[in-house]
Length: 106
Ligand SMILES: [Zn+2]
Ligand SMILES: [Zn+2]
Image 1: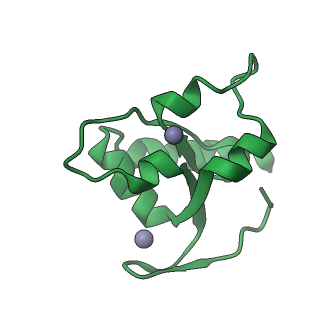
Image 2: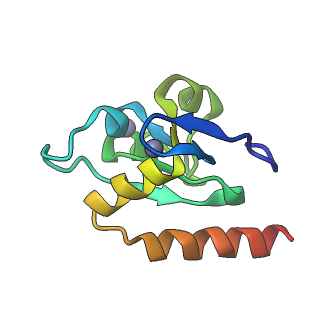
């Protein structure tokens, strides 16, 4: 998690800031039954994981670094917002969280 995330190149959206999702969400299809979508914008990075990953979170609500490294992939911010939308999270809620994270970091 860096303060100046490098842009990534998405096939569908071009150059975008990176965000992070668990492999299970990354591999799920829009038509699949929902597997949970727990997201936050801690430190300005969008991150989401499924119910199964949420069960691995520690008492502090965070996932261990090694679990994160093994089970998460980078997707572009626009892909993240599309995935969130498929799980009932509005893009407005996400941009609000991003703004709040940036205000907190400033
Ligand atoms: Zn997961
Ligand atoms: Zn994308």
